[in-house]
Image (cartoon, rainbow, N blue to C red; front, side):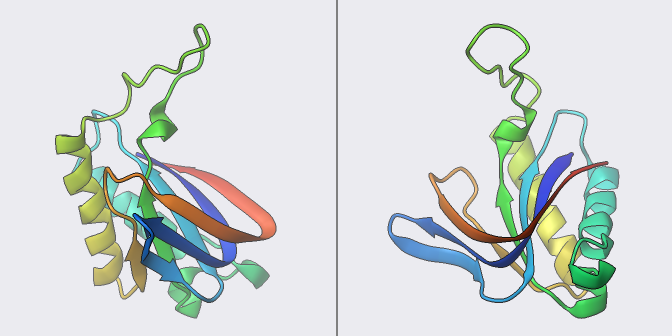
Length: 141
């Protein structure tokens, strides 16, 4: 499981012209990708890491500040561009495996007390964000 976590001052996800998820204050925009070998162990580790990672200003975390997270599924994080000009998606988990794991990460974050908004799995989404810093991390478990 891997994620791109970006510190933002605000972010939103729009599907078919409707805002489906947003944060209107400093927090993290998380693009979350799932691969074939991911399971419950990776879910728990990723949720903990995203909640506790000290990526906010003054080396704070969402856990210590109560800052929100906007989690957006992103299968393309497992795209490979090693060969040719067309990305390969063979390392990305199929939707029937990935969707429940993305939902579990969100549920685990909420169980930890995090405020979480989301995109819509599998939808064509317009993601807007105002990066703060910019400060962006690749998070892998």
